[in-house]
Length: 240
Image 1 (tube, rainbow, N blue to C red):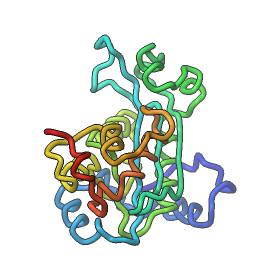
Image 2 (tube, helix red, strand yellow):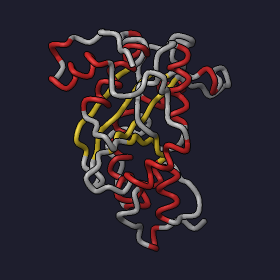
Image 3 (tube, one colour):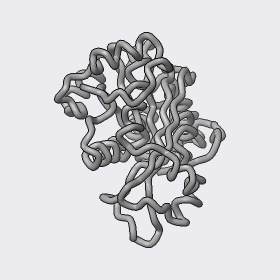
C-alpha cells in the first residue's frame, strides 16, 4: 500500500518512517479482510493474552429529518486506541475530518456529538485523516493484530469514505464485531449498545458519549467481557 507523504517524517518514530518507506505491511490489493480470513484469524489469535487490539469508533454527518441518508453520511471524527485484553488503553488517536458532500453540520449532529462547525472546517479531508490512522495502526501493530468496533457500522463507513475519496482502506488487518462478540460471550440473548454494555459491566461512561475517542476508550474497557475473559453477574444480565 503506497501512502502519500503528507505527514512530516521528523515527527514519526523510526518504525513509522520504516512503514512509509516500505508502503505499509498489507498487500497492495487488500482493502479489507474476507470473512473466511477473519474466521481463521479468530481461531488462532483472538484469545491470545499477549495480543493488542485496535479499537476504532467513528462519528459522521447525520440529521434527524432525513436530509442526510445513511449512504451520504461522511466521517467527521476518527477515534482509536490500542488496548490490552485486560482493557488497559495503551495508545490513543483522535482526528477530526472535513466532510465534502454535506460540509455544514446539522444542529442535530452538533448536539449529538458536541463537534462544532469550526472543528470540521479546520480539519483535513479524509485522505489525510486516513493516512494518519493508517500510520497509527501500523506503528503500534503486531503480526496477530485485529481491529474492533462496536457493530458493523464503523467498518462500512470507512469503506464508504475510502471509496468516496478514492484511497485505500486504512487498516490492513481483520475486523471483529465487538458488539456481536459481547452478546455471544456474555450469553445475553441479543446485541446491545455500547452504553448499555458498560452499564451491564458496572462501568460509568468515561468522557462524552458519541465522541470518537471517548467511545473507543469505553469499548476498550469492555475488552475482558468482549473476549469472554470476564463475565457479567447474572443479576446484571438484561431480561431479554
